[in-house]
Length: 387
Image: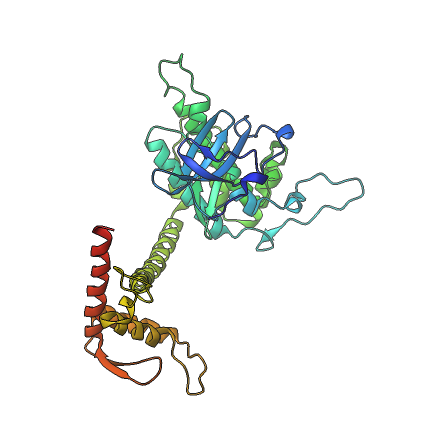
């Protein structure tokens, strides 16, 4: 729901094609200091925007001339911002000044990421490449600044397809001829991402630091992880496939699968709660359209008479209970329980007391449900009839 003050952000348009309510997802550089990105060699900017056709938010990636629209994931951050945003992490690979002592190598859980997290990332990224390569395409943006993390460890590859548009050559007869070459480059890029994660530093993937980086991997991680990185980064005489690294992942795939299934269970449990919450919200919304309505069909007393009066007393029973001392009695379980009984039309009786406490009406939840449904239907019929 984030929005900007349009009067203070004149450089952000109010609409772009069918998108409106633009909100920058990255800091906007001053107009006189626009710089080309290292990934695309173009000036880029990124916005959240709402599509007027389906009213859903999207991520707009603007290449200053073109705008690409992607799925929007609220609260997502890049792998770069989560894991590579600390300049101090590169200190192990920076050259020592004369007289400075060599720093001790970082260790797992003491400057380095746990291996289980790296394998979780490997499974997801290799799965993404497998899906793309199987379709005869290439990713071409396997870079920490273009990998999104949502939640704790869920990865999504951002900006796919942009290079295919930006480097399109209309003079080529076979546009897929270079695809095997691009797919091999994807595997090298994956190797660089994994090595950077294992070193917890982007400085580790620089050519002059590769030997030191691999030594760090050998000391702190399993031989499988080391072999996977070497395989992805090494030049091969034959075309490699992302499927080749599956034996190196091995049984760790089941760990990731179990974690995914457990997450599904948690999400389904939360979804079940939200289904119930949605049902109760609909009851409250309908009740709100009936209670205290100032006038209906030119009758100012409509909400205070007949079935509507019962529903008003029920609303007081729900929300306006007091203790013997006259202080508000607030109990969410009481509200939820009463609403569920109303929705089910339970035969249980409930005592409804008037506000002046001079009368008590004893009714069943079944009676209240009948009053509730007939009154709401009366309102609905009026909305479809003449004004």
